Amino acid sequence: MKAADLDNPLYYLENFDTLIGWVRSRHADLLLPEERKKLDSLDSLSQPARALLARMVMRSGEHFRVDRLNYPELGAPVTCAAKELTTARWLQQNPPLSVDELFRLITLPELREALAPLLEQAGIPRNANKSAMRTALIPIVPDPQPPDAWGLSRATEVLRLLDMALFDRVRLMFFGNLRQTWSDFVLVELGHQRYEPVAFSPESRAFDERADVDCYLRMQHCRERLDAGEHPSDVWPDIPSNSDNPWLESRRSRLLFEFGKLAERANVHELALQAYDASGHREARLRYLRLLERQKAYQKAWQVAQQAITTATVRPGEARGLERIIKRLAAKLHEPLVSPPARPSVPAFSLRLSPMPGQSVEWAVSEALQDPHSPVAYVENTLINGLFGLLCWEALFAPVPGAFFHPFHIGPVDLYREDFVTRRADLFSDCLGLLDSGAYQTRILTTWQQKQGIACSFLVWPVLSRDLIDLALACIPAAHLKQMFQRLLLNLREHRSGLPDLIRFDPGNDDPGQRYEMIEVKGPGDRLQDHQQQWLEFCVARNIPVSVCYVRWAPTS
Image (cartoon, rainbow, N blue to C red):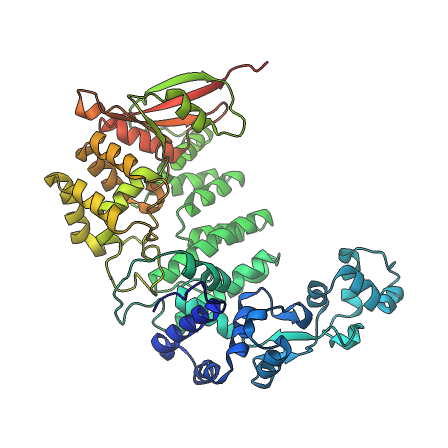
């Protein structure tokens, strides 16, 4: 399975056919007989008809005007391809249109001309804007009407794409999510990126049961209803119950967390508390406690916070938030407060700089600190993550069941699951063991050469130049890299960010542990975030050289 050649004007059709074929061959057991029959019928369509169908599937919405379908690469008139698709029941000609569907298809001048009688009946001036016209027409014409009933001319032919739900299901089974769209994938990703080849086992698919696909689609529908402004109370009964599938349950936790925030805004606080309590999202417990605080339910919040802080389930990014909540609650309830453990002091220095128009404060500091013997690079999270990805490439792309659904992943889909590291424990142990033997530099450089340009979620190739990697390997001790990589593996989701902005190299320093320094930059009025503070404190506690640079702008004339 490979991407089509972009020189082929119908490359998108090749990629579309590839995706459909992959699902037909590997997910057929998750499709109903009528769904399989429908997808099989694609083979009997002519190439122009399949190409037009692919184009329409990739566009937003289900209704299209024929006069706006302009695809000369089809090799046949759009009207002929559309007629074939209509006969094969992929399209419906001139379907009834709701007010919203009509307004999405027709321009304002066309609406004013076609709807003149209805506007007059509603007492709406013809020069009204779309919003006013729509608001007035919905109660007058609540049901969909054929295009000619709306006053559209015969020249304005409308087509409706049928079976879009089937295409969404296919897309979901291929990607394992609905975040990636047909157009993103078929038009862009396949043609513009290279991917690591991974061996696929029978277990390498997003879903094992049709019920899991249905559950995902129900959650997606709930999310869309919330995004469309439907009241959370109406959506709540339709959110699926908890799932035995860890991956689906993770998605359900995200849905419940977003639901809780929307319920808060709608002042349905009890419903928001239920959603946060049922969610396993990393921020759900803090939101739950803050909402209890706002409701002045201090005693209950205190009990929950005390229970949370003493359990092993507290995430690193959650601990600071819990400490702040407990401090506030202790003052309100006159409870004794246990002081948090002492934390190391992070070195800091100040710079007074002139603003550089069009440049970030990090770039300004980088330029100010630049020295021929001590070069400075603006790397933020890219360098340490990149070195980790290069060293552990084999572990990241190991063909673990359920990690890769198709040949176009930039990383394993279970990257943020709690069992991600344990499922690859031996592989990561071998990779990090190279830091003890001294063979890590060869592994990193070999991977950099062999995998250059291959998409990986840990690497930003344009930043990771050979010069930067050579400097990093010459200046950062292997023991420091190992400690930072081990922290990454403790919580990849949270620890991949928060690393200092700059790195200053000092290759001539006699002390091997002081040949570099990572520097976090804070402009006027900016402050350290929790995840940044935690990285800095981690480094200080292990003698990894870091500091914070606080910038003040010099007055301008």
